[in-house]
Length: 252
Ligand code: 13P
Image (tube, rainbow, N blue to C red; front, side):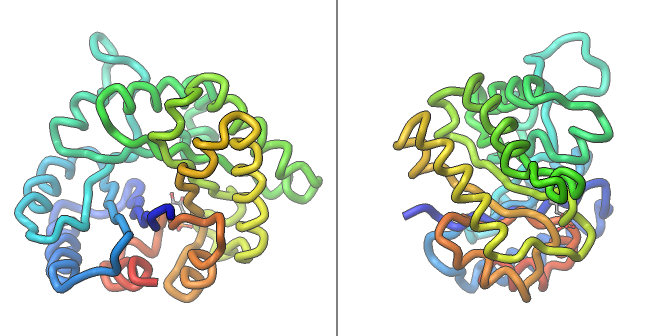
């Protein structure tokens, strides 16, 4: 049985005060108890990691973990502006997002670079959350499966068996921040497709790896999405900024 994982991705939103208030609220609720077999994480912007890490370590519930939104593909050295996986590890990050569509699109990240970032994360014991997904044009022209398969194939080729220690996140670009959530069936079909592709490579990896869905997830649609056999949780953008909405999704 794969656990349900719910991760909040704040993107470039929030503030130090907002992080404090959010963790206060979420930890207080989590201390009262959360459904078993579930894992939760918050990925705030880099500058807030230190503060969030201290606050989360003081929380008596072990349910909430910390994650980062990106990581360098380099181990260290003269790479101005980059943050290494070892640095994230120092701040107790358990997860790191790699290959979010906003980074693929706005920062020209290639599948190879994304896999190299994932390898850096794995080397430091972090779980990379490798994002894949098609654009609206790609879906409308009937190429959604082909595009996602190509993205997954590059990760399989480079990460091989180490994929088993990663999470995948299917985030259709047309569903991100648009309010147009993929129907539970559309999401399930793509998750199934990804799992079948992984099984062609390694049945063990395919059955163990968590595949999260991301794109306009709210409490309203989370119950149906998380109820699908190949959907193992969610990567939540906008709705994760509100602690009550995030908690409701965590319980969905
Ligand atoms: P929204 O939930 O705001 O659509 O964002 C999804 C996302 O990009 C999470 O990484």
